[in-house]
Amino acid sequence: MPESTPDSTLPPPRERPMRYAHQLGYNRRVFLQRAGAAALVPLFPAIVPASAIGADGTTAPSNRIAMGLIGVGMVGQGHLQGFLHAPEAQVVAVCDVDQWRRENAKKTTEQTYATQSGGGSYQGCVAYKDFRELLARDDIDAVFIATGDRWHAVASVMAARAGKDIYVEKPVSLTIAEARAMVDAVRRHGRVCQSGLQQRSSREFRLACKLVRDGALGKIQAVYVNGPGTSSDVNLPAEPVPDTLDWDMWLGPAPWRPFNHRFVYIGQPLNVVPWDFCRDFGGGSLTSGVVHAFDVVQWGLGMDESGPIEVSPPEAGAYPDLTFKYPNDILVQVVPGCLNGKKQAIPKGWNESTPIQGFGALFVGERGWIHVGREGFLQSFPDDLVKKYPPDYEQAIAGESHHRNWFEAIRARSRPDCDISVGCQSTIVAHLGCLAYWTGRTLKWDPAAEQFIGDDEANRMRSRAMREPWRI
Image (cartoon, rainbow, N blue to C red; front, side, top):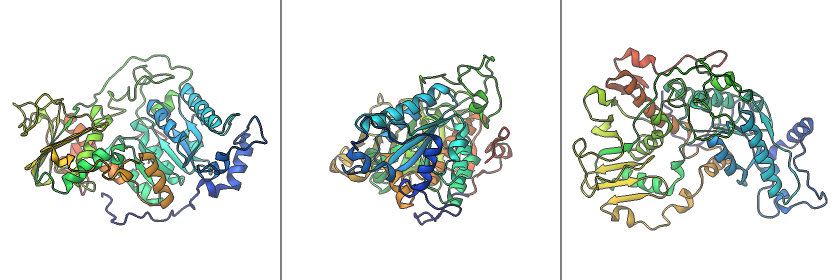
């Protein structure tokens, strides 16, 4: 059942006391001694940088949230840079099944901290191939998970059981059942879990969704997002497994299949999700990208604890594009680029040559429309719907990074802006779209029970078997 606890304050952990970096003291020192890794080895030991003790206004390393990163491909590398420059965090471990990536992440971490210290060398980051070794460390408070979708649920549930707070990239899961299991594990173990739908921390999206929820457009009639398409079953020829990759661990809970270079870039990544065309590993564009837009829709419609009641693929014949029906007869359509006057009604004031912003949404109501997207994009008709708000609207809140919001939630033991329950619901919308495409028919959905109405085959597709020994 969807999480519905109204209180935003997390219960205390049931299994383990909270361990922040400033509370680790003896344990951390013992661990580093045993690992043979002194936290900081300056070239001039007599000179201690002010930042090392927090005298320059920064947070001393001993007071930071000790972090481990699981998955340091292109997305993970980008986040690593953010964490390394966050005064609230101290990266002490990285993990990847690709040798180049984990060694590069370790090198980047140690070089960055050495530079920040004013010179010298730093040897306080350990690289792992198996994330279970990272989770076993008592001196790690929180983990960032940027593996492929197939790993998100297993790694997150295991992290929650290990007493770690979690930031998990989108989509939060590979299946509907996994999403629910993740919420349950986070709640059971009293963890703070941020979903990687970072537009929740963007000023433009905050303003757009607040206006829609507050009735600025009147009754919502339709919503449009961009980027249809999902994955398919594929069979690629077997190729030799590179010596620098643990292929069995890369597959994890997914079905075994032979290695092929199209699934994964060896070494330095060239793109974010090369594997998402294969149904074993992802849901294609709907789960890799459009899930961001679905999150905006859920947010704007005030459906963070619910979702659509029907989904229909174009093959079913009811609508020209993949379409979700929400309560109050609101239709959300996934269009390929621009609106087509022959397929969709063109809202007053809308230019047909304007593409729907990727990762954004066009909300159409009885009083006009609001169009929001990435990189500061925000328009409306009439234009004073958004222009009448001062430029510093909610600046102090919305300008904070998704990382900072997560850190603050960890400190306060509260739910972050995109709590796992929110990420779960938005990810389920993407999964519903995939299942509609894969079955080729209209599916009726009960968001409270999280099951399809009168469709046994679709209900069986809410979950998948996991390869031994992985379980959630």
